[in-house]
Image (cartoon, rainbow, N blue to C red; front, top):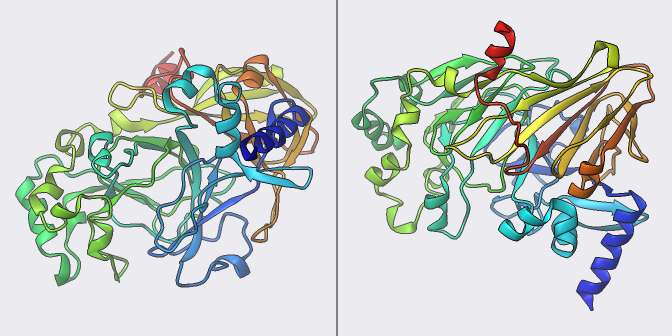
Length: 413
């Protein structure tokens, strides 16, 4: 009976929005990081969950993945559908209407929306860390976590303290050198960044980050389409003078290997970490997918390419000029966040707020079902400035997805 009632509530929201669901903001704190205060959340609410939980430095989009935070309630990280005073999780809605919402092939394969995205916003850098692959995470009944980055210009009005990201390890680095860093964990800074290289971050560009690759994200606001998991292992013992507990290194490691340094070293994909052409193989710049100046809109690929040969997620940035309209058809469902301006998406009015209080329901986030995406969605700019939105897709959504490096072919062409 409970499932029938939930199915009816979700059906009502789907019908009212004609396949487009409005979502409430999903805020996630991190106890080991310092928020960058650029997510439009009131400064009075950055520690709305208490200082013991940490500052709110992430906002998750169209998420059916819970956050793996100590002391978190079971729904932390889950997106909620809001409709006519009702409220229920996107995860529950997809469980009831999965084939319609995310497409039958995806629902049959995963039984859930297997990806999510977030805004990640910190004052400074975070520790050099990796995310386990599918096989490693499966040892704990979890899933691996490849991810991607895009740095939205609208949110990066300041770079904060360190707009550089370390990726991987310098070519020629040995496993013994990394092993020494882990052995030095309790002696202060273990020096792992001496073995890595930092890349300057540029708004309007991005990166594809495979699992088992070390990375220490810098202080730009980052849009991160990724696999639906929250596994990680921190390999840097101190960041900005703050201790990183060993527990954050072995959080998603089988208990019998918590002190096994060889196991921790072997978790890394060594070839990808010491790749001498890491930037060439992982760096992304936008590629125009459709539209043009005469049409009044540009739809651009911002996240594309394959991870270990698989299309796991992708994302686009749509810009519609004032007074113009664009109808966009996509072969898969997507989660969407508005980053500038206001307008309508289908029949729903949307806008990008300047100031958000914790718990407030905004009008900047929606989920578009696979059925509706395939039929086409009208984006209409009703304001005086460009109407910009980011939308991300699940696995195998696009037969025409560009490959990493294709932006250079476009430039040369």
